[in-house]
Image (cartoon, rainbow, N blue to C red; front, side):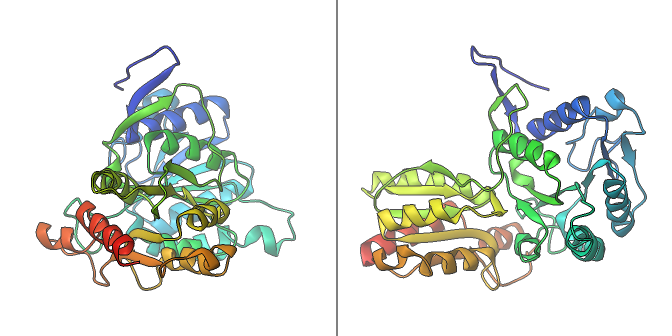
Length: 336
């Protein structure tokens, strides 16, 4: 682990290192916490996130599993019901399709169906998103699937600090939590507190403030929105950039307040537009008190309604890039 200590005990870690540190600290603090998934042990995880944890905690608590997502999640649901705190790693979020019955019909509903007599404190980590040349079956953004299901909590950390803090909060939660980690963020670095500091679920982060428009972005689009905001500032357009961080529960109050102040909203996601989660945020805005303050229609900038292509130039064209955010934001301000 590469770390640079400073006077406030905040180090610079990569996103992957921050996730690994959270896993290690949770396992040190609570012997009920254990990991399971394909190649999470000796191999260290498909993206190297679990690293050396098997050497620190042993094969009983870092458990390599057969290639059966349905079986992996089913085992985790059973372990959670028996009082453990399992953390599942699914190699690619696309593979959750193999386990949807256990996620949607079991983990999400057991607490309700048993009248609160049982809980399922399970965390499911899943790398998602495009940009690695992994093509259509390994590059999807599926957050809207999970956010649609009552009983699931859905987390999308965009920074190394949130990758650690939100994961720790998810492990503490008595409900099943889906943590969607964008693959392109694993090597991104940023300050991370050394202490196991939780980031409470359901709090939107204001990454930047500006008076001309509000940009709401998730996952890797947060850093792209911030880069776009710098370019826009050079053009005389000041943008607020908001990162919901958790889709369920969603802190829409912070979003509504920002849109009320700026009068314009640009909602950015990597996932395709049709049925995407930004449609939910758009509805929350127009159903709220912010509606009367809008100077322009709420705008969405999303991935194309196509499977993610393999060819690099087509893959890039299929999802929003920094220049796309700059263009859409500039047009929104100048036109309205």
